[in-house]
Image (cartoon, rainbow, N blue to C red; front, top):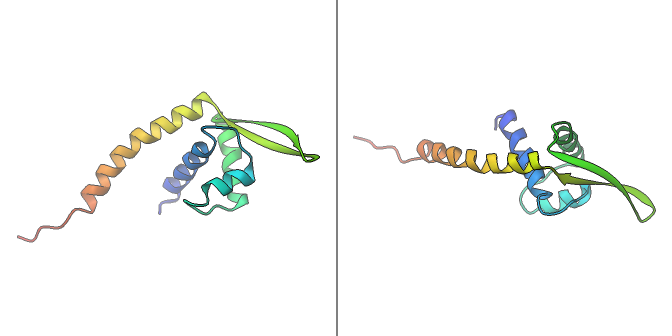
Length: 105
């Protein structure tokens, strides 16, 4: 798979994982596990990139005596998810075209 396409897909997967409620790294990986495998190092690279793009914010809170980072999707992050859904319609149409049955005449 094209690396840029995969990067974009993983970005929206992480945004979707925190769309409904704030979450933290381990939980994001756990929530995504039924759909895809992601290493912690990959996740934290994505989270930093999304934060730099203002698609999410980070806050620290104490949990069991340790600081835990919680990630919150921003309005720009929600817009990115909505844009992805629209883009995906076009991608599906292209996929259907590419995988259609060949006609031998």
